[in-house]
Amino acid sequence: MKKKFSLYWTLFSSTFLLSAFTFGGGFVIVPLMKKKFVDQLKWIDEEEMLNMIAIAQSSPGAIAVNAAIMVGYKIAGFWGAIITTLGTVLPPLFTLTIISFFYHEFRDNRYICAMLKGMQAGIAAIITDVVFSLSKNLVKKKQKLSILMMVIAFVAVFFFDINVIIIILISGLIGAFSAIYQSKREGRDSR
View 1 (cartoon, rainbow, N blue to C red):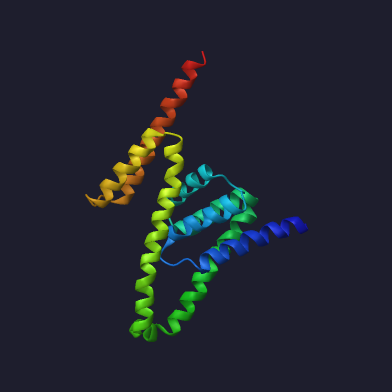
View 2 (tube, rainbow, N blue to C red):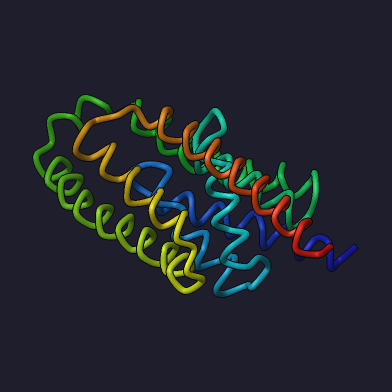
């Protein structure tokens, strides 16, 4: 019982702190979750984290909450998912409640506006870091199709302004066809 409580408390406190200090949208929490659950606690490996992020991004809802649910469920089942969801949702709820009372003062305060503008640069750096750290694994394993899809998706979104939903759906279909093809090929090779 004590061990389970310790696990639940670690899940809650980790996701609560990550969510409390994550500014700039759901993608910012991804590298922080990776550092906490993959690098520090070693509860999941990097490839599994990458898969969870892909599923969390393609699921409806906030990516931070979806990723927390998946990590919590992987580590501690149903109650882990509930606990990580609470840990992820409570900090923004508290913050938005406080900001709603002082909205006009925050909106017109030049220091707050300057602080938020400065945070944008830090957020861009964090997102860039997660792209490089998670794509390193693809390069190491020489997954040519995944690397090609990543480059094409970037070009499609950045230069041609193609909707992200279309990119996700096409990437998912290519991944599914690739997996089917690979399993059939492995089946033929084993005969």
